[in-house]
Image (cartoon, rainbow, N blue to C red; front, top):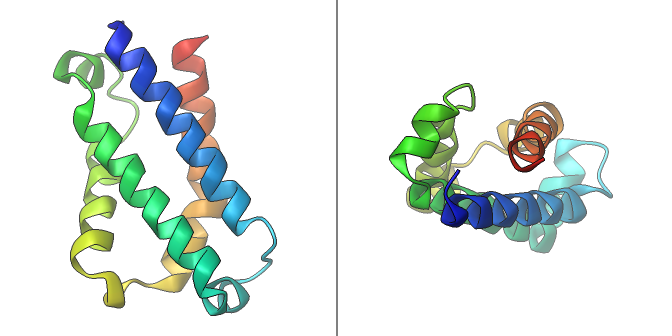
Length: 111
């Protein structure tokens, strides 16, 4: 693994920690979306996560193709280009269902 990719994966893990931190106090989508500061901060970190994916080397992404890099980047694009069309439930569901697995997968890459 290239040292640049290791640094980027560590940055992604820090971003995931922030996503968890900003969304931790919410048990449901409505409360999460109503707290616009937490919701906006979380969305910004999803954008940062996607931006970081875009900086990974092609070789690294190809080598670790079990991670759905293109979906992570695509979600970044949706947030950046259709901010007011974001589905609150989809965001909350991604945090609860997909981000924990991504965190584990990324952690395994640097261990």
